[in-house]
Length: 128
Image (cartoon, rainbow, N blue to C red; front, side, top):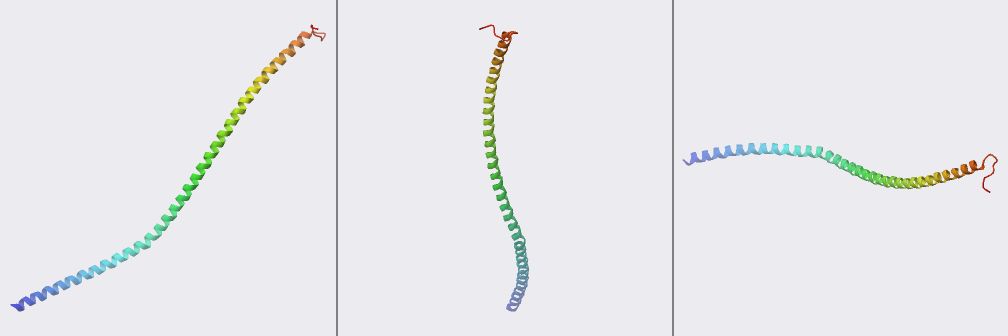
């Protein structure tokens, strides 16, 4: 009876050994595939990360340029506003000056015509 138990035990050990060997072989294949996948990922991922870094640097540069342009446009807008204020002031002063000049010319012309018409055909004034 012990011999049968030993034979059964031996067969069980051999069967377990064959099973464990096949599991170890499959585990070794899986490990190789996993290492190959990781190596492939490293090869493919490194250029992508490098491109991403360059893209981020380009975005930073473009953002800085846009910020600088925005500040320059703000300065230009301030200058245009200042020039517009100056032109408005000059226009108001010019309008006031022209109104005064118009009134002066109108009065002067009126006096001139009055004196010219009042002088008569002889050229001398009735007064004096």
